[in-house]
Image (cartoon, rainbow, N blue to C red; front, side):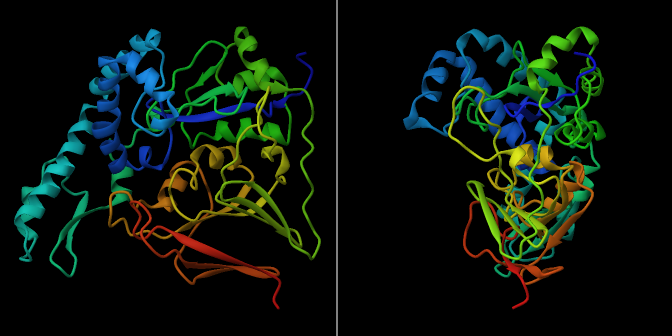
Amino acid sequence: MKDSLYRLSESSVLEPLVNGWYAWPHLISPVPACLNLAYHQIPTLRSYLQNPEGHARMARDPEYAGSPFCDISPGQAHRVKELLERAEREQSADIEFAKDVLSFSDLLHREAKGERLTHYYNMAPASLRGLFELVYDYYNNPTVRFIEGLLYASKHYNKKRQSFRIFRLFKDKQRPFFLSTPRFVDAGEIEWKASFDDPALDMLLDLDINPQPVGRIIETLGLKERDEWKVVPHLSPDRSILPERWKEKGVRIRYFGHACVLLEWNGVAILTDPNISAVPAIQGVERLSFQDLPEKIDFALVTHEHQDHFSVETLLRLRKRIECLVVPKSSGLLYGDVSLKLMSSKIGFKRVEEIDSLESIPLPDGEIISIPFLGEHGDLAQAKRGYVVRAGRE
């Protein structure tokens, strides 16, 4: 067995976590991450501990799908309690920062009515100073515009809180709702203490193309030889046979689900809004998955930063295979309208193109054109784009 070569199983999931919660954009960018911690995660955990049975029951009721109920059995309440206590103890500065953000914003909206904003900088809580600028819109509504690059360099972005939970997907609908239910590593699963930009992740994902001996895989995961029993169920001895590049002049379109489509022609591969699922080991809807993608994807196009379009899990899984990640431009005027370019670089992407409306990226036989994404779309004001892909010049 030690001489055999292995790749990741098609049913294996590398689930990225931040402080034990499923990673999505608002848990990575520092301001929304602190706000989520203070005003969503902690209240949800406290509510669960007051009524574990009620939460477990409501979380499984289809009528309440997407509601803030933890899908955790009452027998695991002690783990929820430990998670809550650790968050309140280790992230107290983040909690206070979130409170300061809201209190300062409330102060501005009560008092600033169009006069100069200079003196308000000195009124800001100490935790915010040097991290923002103040601006008015044309109706004299004040806004705190945070400088995201500085926040990523502050104590409110801590890569040590990032990790991966590696487990096997046995059936569809196995995974609880990501916003309401923290993740715990159970028997047979692997907790991998690696940050999202860790080069070891690329080494692990290279298994899809270059299988390795089990000993090398154990070493990459930072485990001991005695942990082989944990690792082997997540591996497959079959060598991956990825599809060759589509070199025909005609366009081939393959649908992977939701807004994820693979466009190929003349040797070019473009993937839209990457959101791809592992293949369940036992039962599940038939689907295309990671093994159905070519070894290299020239461009991955992201329309906006909602979790189902900027899927951190899928993007990290494909990071080694994506040559260029294309994201919409953002000025960070709203707390939730975060910079996907900054975030993508922080999670290890080397080439990220931030594109504005009507800008384009030339291709050897065509182009990618960014077009306006009009209308209200949740918390997004700017960081949203559509794309027109021209295959051919005529």
